[in-house]
Image (cartoon, rainbow, N blue to C red; front, side, top):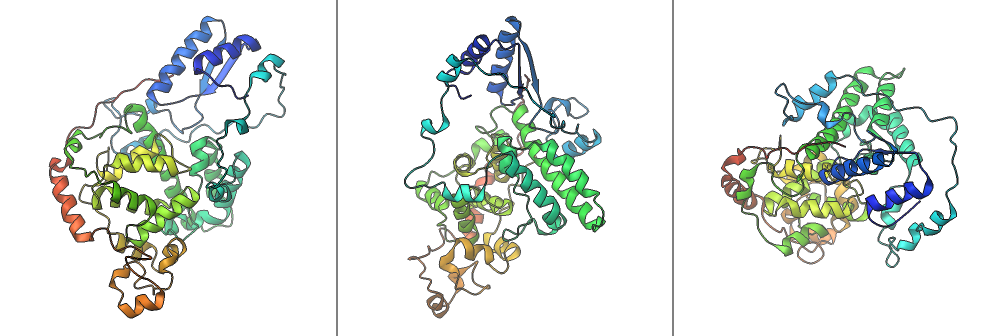
Length: 427
């Protein structure tokens, strides 16, 4: 049923009109959501309605993991080791053999909205066609993706996950983000696959451990959101408030459109626009480029990713942006400034990824596809590349950008300020 209106008032009215005796939901972890859920629980219980909430999003509840002082962990490694010491999370419940549904009163169904009537889907142009092709929706699609990954891609995960042209990643993040599959389902299936017969045990064990740690990083992002309510709004390291971010709408737009003149960055941003997804290695390079090459506030990048990623969630998106910028907990060192050329040469050495998403450069040889500005006039002409016309000149030179970024980061005193105070609670 799709109803519109104030959340609490609509749910309370639905309970009253339907005669429901119990209400169940999966917990939410944002500060405002937790407060709303607490208030709703109180209101319904005062009516004599049974109310229970459950963990459907995480492997561990955020309030169950803390350091020896009872404070939240600020370093991922220590956090994840503490999680692993707790043992495997409870396995997901089995599907019920049958479910009994009761019809709702007609007066309720008449009030319900239809999703198509809300006019949310794009019409002309249908800009979401690439997203639909890349991401079949629903639980069955999520389970099929999980089965395919474990059967064919898991063994190569540890070795191949960093290459954007490789299919070694799980591509489960959109399904986890919307709740089409739960991390406990993924964890249980991973453990079962890890011990499957007839596999290269050492290779599989290494890949399974690495993939599990990526689930752990997702947990750590949600852990941060729980303890730091304004994760998406303020620097977790207050020293970064002194960072001299630049207001540069033209450069921001060039980055958004994949027109920076750096092929790996541009390929990633175009992949994002077309499919709603970007390989994780390229996300780091693109985010580093915005915050360190262009000195544009990480919040501008976080907002763009929120609007364009199919796997954006309110925890992983800001936590990862703060990690790259250097303003978050356990963040990348402020002096780590990815060189997009070297990153491309290392992780896309044959240029397959760049050629797919930046076809203007497809005719360049492998040695030049990541730095077309080094190509001679003859090579550019042979490849049909006209720098500044059909592909942009570099928006800034790497060494100049690096020096400027380090000067800016020096104003944050190495970003050694205390982490912002925590805010917690649960519903």
